[in-house]
Amino acid sequence: QTVLRPRRSLDLTWGRAMATTGLFESLNLAGLISSYGLFLIIGGAWGTLTTGAWHSLYGGLAGGLLVLFCAFLASFTSDRKCVAAGVHIDLLLAAVFGSVFSLQTYRAYGVPEKADRFGLFVIFVLGSVCHIAAMILKRRSLKAAEAKAKDS
Image (cartoon, rainbow, N blue to C red; front, side, top):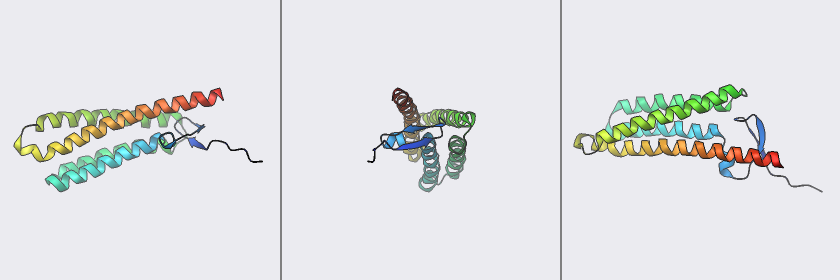
């Protein structure tokens, strides 16, 4: 007889195998970090196409590549210190980006010359806040899964 067991995946962020129960739990932290990096790169390219400001593309590429490097640290190493560094640097970058985009949104509000960039800044602020919230929720779900695995 075959005994059905929950699907287990290797979660390199904590260095041990953990039982996963759903889509959000099966996404590791590196996947969330990578999606934020791609969001920054695509948003920078979109800003260049819609406003013609090339610095939007340069900023999006630079920020996105920094965040993707953090994802590399969080996924392709087995050293917990590298993983922790990647995750925490990513959270720091997301907080800095969110603050800068908030300031730019405030400065662009009500200025006719910057009206074309206002929507882009709002999207970037929301993306940064959602990324930080998703990372916090992911951490909580990993802790809950870890506690459940210890109890079993």
